Length: 408
Image (cartoon, rainbow, N blue to C red; front, top):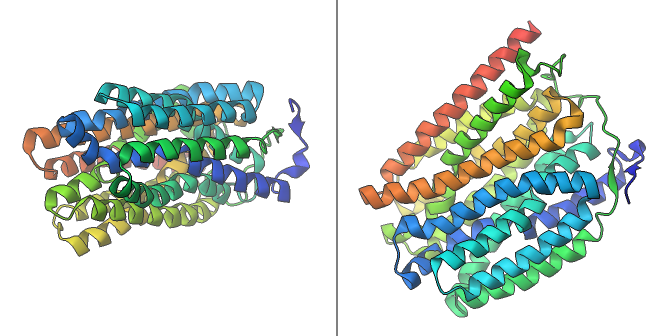
């Protein structure tokens, strides 16, 4: 269907059913983002490589996912979501199966790059941008529900994959993942034929921070504002990636075993689901930039908590805290763009900032492994994440100050 849906469908039951379908697509399409962290110790042992090299498939996948978000978003704008999602389903299936058959770390990495560039990319930025166009009054919570699918994937898949590794091996587990996720995505994609309603320029009722002049967001040029959000996206996710990518390996090094690490990752991301939903409700009341500022400050506090505590029970607690504190950061960027930029540009701008967050995850995942190889410890890697988080907090604080100055 090439024509836009009736604007009366915004905030309707149709929008709610579409959001539920979107959530399922995100859970299936983003599985590879967290599965690769679980298999990291097994892959490192099988291929006889260092921690940094074992982290490269994750880095490559996240870079490709970020780049893929740009072109999948443009394809969705031109052809609709369904063809993009069907192509993504095929890529996820081929990527998992190909990675399970790989006989070198480079082929393993290329398979993950394919999943990122075409597979996961189809179910991330395009779906967040699409969701923002179907909702006005509850835009913040709707985008948060869409984004929480990413963390549902992170809480659901790691323990399941760890069980598969222990029973049938990581290669067969990957093959089954390809079949299940690819087929499930294809079936759900058939429900996404309808194009979003015509863009509405009315801000959400709770968006108190909406800019009055969208031609100059935050009182600066759109290009400068976009660049600052891009840098903020990279910085927050370099910090975010340290626990998310390396918690399994960290627990293995501490002698707790990979299974405990997978449980912590699952707990961290399950807590992130709660965080994203609560942050969505908060965002509808205080706006995107304040939500970003709050999330950035809390993420920095959680990262600091990893430094003094390395016991089993404290790590479970800190992992849950980290998930609760940082879950609302990434969705807030989509709301900020919807509030402060021209709505006709929302798709491309959301895709750009989401690409920045994924590049940050890629850079941070590799950088933490590299620092570990140099120092033999993750302490310095945590400090590196804290420094990047301070950069994000500084940008968010400056943009918040600009908004308050405009309002004054």
